[in-house]
Length: 535
Image (cartoon, rainbow, N blue to C red; front, top):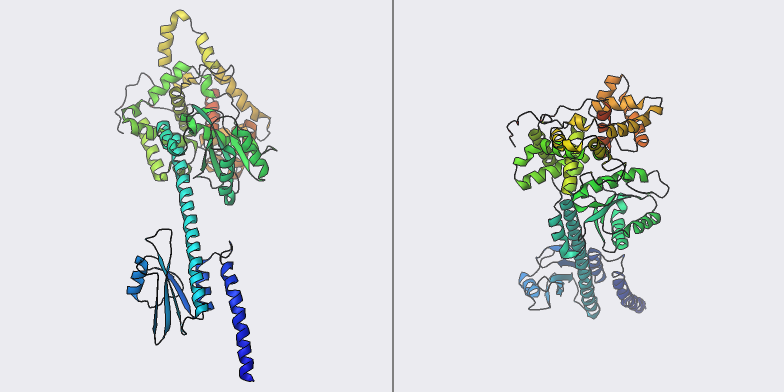
């Protein structure tokens, strides 16, 4: 009776096993159960033995290492046989070929058990090998898709980096292969979407969807929470605003329309607009065109001064000169670390290039007034290359100061006026009535604050933007200096604690009002003979 009862019980256990192993195997195909190691372990337990999987190179993928007949394994990998069986005093072993998307890269599934393989265990082994093939194909497809996305993302970044250094020809050439017509435009806008860094990949995919191929979408290499978009046309702005509405906690900053050669300037505008977006209920803002100091200067004098200041760089080979200028422009707009990430070089490379420009111009970039004036020259040079010389701006913005300066000249004395413009110094550029009126209005906004923000800001700029040195001069705490500078930002509507165009405009305002002395630039004197240049 005991034998009969045991036999009946064993029969029920066999029926239960036969009816459940197939379902358990199918469970490994569910999205949450697709784990090759776990499947191989399940196989070993289900057949009451040990299982392992090796790839085409013989590397153990899953399961414990077992002694295998290398001749049989080689025949299976080569496709000469599909399976093999062996037995010895220790037990029985089966070897099966496991297919792979690459026919030359088949793996080998090995299963060992103390008892012979019956029909049930053979079925389990065969069906498990089929499931393993499906999982391997799915994993390879996923990996290939991931590699493709990474390569595409890297390509987008490379195109952005080319635009940042004004190499629009190369940028168009690279983009044409995957996105024909994307950069077949003279102007574009740059947007920066800010959100949670953990959600950036999803936000970038949403940006690709809403812009419908009309934008270059790049995960910012400098800021983990930023997505940069170079947008062609006027239709994507509203789509991006709707994306912000659907994603709480995100911000959107946009630039004004700029030529592709001014992508770096447009990027700076978009980042500046983010500061405005933080205080707006719709969490989005576009950079507002405002009166820029260079547009209030005599255009001809500004061009001549810029050419004279940057002349030492003209001795360099064209590609070297372009590389140094582009790096310096970004290095003056952002930190060396951020500029390096955007350009795809090391921060030491950025610093070395900027130091070389310092040496050529015989200047010191630790002085904020020097940085502001060199930035003025570099911006003017870009505008000239872009066909924007400041003479065609709207009244009150673009060239009104230049016209004021020219209107005072008698047309009959045009030759003498041109000569005076050619000999203009920085102090002459800053002395125009339009520029002085703009500067006094801008800085006058600070006078209503009882903390004398204007005085703190002046000393902070004179100290090179160093709060500790400014605090020593003012006999206050460094944190007080930082708070005053931070309080001046919304009043002036410009970012000050972050280096860039906003700060340099405020520095130029101090120079134009005489609150600070213009820096001593070696090439600012048109009568001074050129010193030897060692570049």
